Length: 608
Image (tube, rainbow, N blue to C red):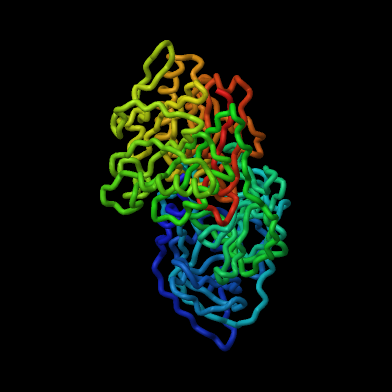
């Protein structure tokens, strides 16, 4: 995945329909015609009045948003119809701070719009709004319509209907079935005042003052309180994003497993950063579950410990070196080999042609020594400037960090950014032509993406081939709440091509030496059940060792409340069949609000 920070910052400014709002205060009640909010909303995702003018739509103000690029307010009809598919609430987009208050009874005239957060190309569903409004305040201090309770009983088990093939797979034109599908249920409440109660946090508070809860406590739960995403059909229907209409300073700072006790209530919105979102007027009280960061076991003298850790755009200007060092020393127990992903060059995002990362690595190695760890050595290959994706000017790359007191690196000269490594046979065993080397760097599959780094290590006289990977991100894929169901995963095309090239190289090694110890690890940017991993695994040449864990423990990343696997260590048959390896997904970041990276490191211990 792209870094949560960079992905969010890139999309902070969203397009909004420009409008001017005018407000009239009446001293006497006004009469509204027959147009009602449920008429505006209709029984599909698209309003039957989209693009049309409506007049004197009546409702009670249930929430007011005075920040960001989508300022406005929600209104709700206190007298609902008997159709569960039609919402009784709608958002009124004013563009500037609204001149209404919660409890005002208003009449709104304006244009009905279907606003797509993130733009039409995102594939997101649209949000029904009334824009360019003329607002008449009829009275103030009215009771707000009671919040509709969202709980385990009300949310269906099935996630979404199949999209209409005649509409390119879109669900927009389908009549909502809120008793059958979770997405239809949430859509039927769009804009209404809703409530959840005593909900467990499944996505920690992030820098954008939002968190995720579940209203289904036992839905794919893991032992640390998260909700696991285990297949493409396990979308976890109970997840809901929580934001607040209050001050950011008052928002709870939560970790996974914590509970928002009592009621959390407010209008149900839809946004590009997670779909259906309860924007709270009232927040529950945070009860901490006391979640602790994990530490793995120390490898024994005869075990080789190999780890992968995405350090999220680490460069010398960062303030996280001591924390990363502590994680490597204390939580990972100083592995013998660490594949580091997202090491940036010596001046980070400064886009001046710098590609060397020796200052970044020296600072990290010194911090590890200061934390009580070994004096690591390192190997990498500087990329061609701005050729490997990531933050422009940052030149992220994979780096091998290794403890020379425990393992040696076999150096073979000639590896550079554009020269492909090969496999040869030396005294009957496989060997690399370059070490370190890059796998097939000219292959179009690695265009604007990280090239795999491979190195040859020796531990207690045994050779181990390690391939450090950072595959194409999932950026550009449609979200789980997209209008297209099932959503498309366009990023897979490049990732599958990358996996094919990596698998081909591994097969060359194993064809040369059947019992070679090969490890392919890193930020695979795809799930352990994905086709990407199936391509990497091939006919058994590799196997993702995270599958040795119980299903509930297979995760390294939490995205929109789903605990999922992106970081993996794949092993060759000689390692898998030995049955003496141990695998650990070490949860130190993904579940916590104070994370120093959005990824959890992975560790494999085995006897070569």
